[in-house]
Length: 480
Ligand code: NAD
Image 1 (cartoon, helix red, strand yellow):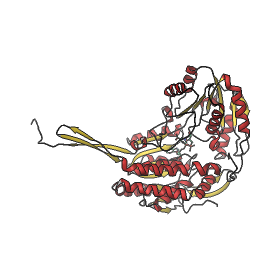
Image 2: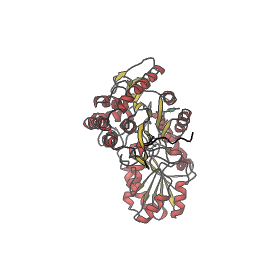
Image 3: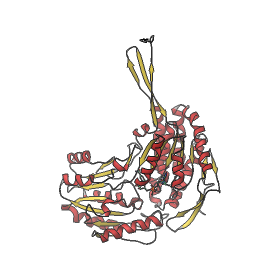
Image 4: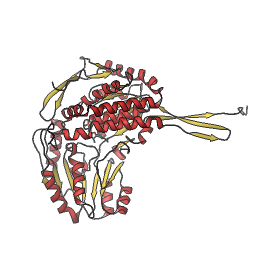
């Protein structure tokens, strides 16, 4: 098997196997080949991982922040040195094309480790003058954090959660998606090589029930989930039992609004990026593309021509621009949405069902707000183009969803751009751009799309807690 790791889990600084756990296969989506066979974590493995994290955390938190930062930055350097091999592994795990994984997956993980490594020494409390007395605040780590990942950006998600957590002095037990379990194991080994103490970052494998056991353990102070809204609801509720901190990065059905004065080629390019990159398996995708009626036909013509030129095929071939979906189950789910869109009267402009795990870039026009395609997250390369006439109308329609992850606006009118963005209910917005998520800028959702933020300085607040310290400088004036 091409991608068999040394063992299923990485705990306490070492590879750990426990064949008592339920076995499961890792599939290369492009061929259906089994590339690794792992075992789900048993309760004993889960306990060992949490105990390791707990044991490592206090010593790590006691280090100077600059020392913690140095470890993370070394890990970032190791990732960049090995990006070529890591990117191939990411292709095998996810089916995404190598031309994407080489620039978007591990590299953005390395960015997060470098950014939060650099940020760690700058995080301080404040002094509060109170006459002769004073108070000060300390920003302290939370303790043991649990990270649970989705399958669409498995290594990036592991890094985006590990980097701020570890930078702020926490330890982590991470459970990758059972669909893409390989990348996080590499991160765990790399962190140890970079100087992280054994047990600081542990990886355990398994399905939702392993995640559920982690979330409710009394040693856990915080849970950060990237996943769907239904899972988010369950994990948030389970975490609430223990009053645990949470970050929820959930799904979306984001609007991308193209006004008539927009640069049409840029807007078409953004709509394609926001629907076809990673075969459309991106939470923040602009899957409801609202195009002003006056430019609709020219927009669709250019979109169709460029979509049909996309090179699909073997994701390990550097010329391939789009690979398969992550699994047969996901391909079937996406196909069902394509069929439903046709049945509900949307106009198929290009694409369609595809074959096996491959679904081609697909565009539907004349989509209306109540069609299933405009309401539900498809998580595949299926774009819905909707018409609009007026600014107020399109803002109201863009906001008429339970989700609120992201939104985009294309216009040459700067006043309109800021006015519209100001009224959109979304945690992350783009003006004349789409789906760029640099680590320097915070990312996350409103409404059902989540709570908390990843990336940027905002993430610090989600991996620390404040302690206020009052300092009495004079005799205590008691009335008793
Ligand atoms: P999912 O919700 O099925 O699973 C996510 C993770 O949660 C997996 O590791 C799974 O094993 C685990 N899990 C499932 N049930 C659980 C439970 N009861 N307790 C604890 N853990 C449990 O999501 P998915 O299909 O892997 O990923 C796709 C979804 O993720 C999409 O909805 C997408 O929008 C979302 N996503 C969001 C972001 C973001 O940053 N907002 C990023 C990527 C993906």
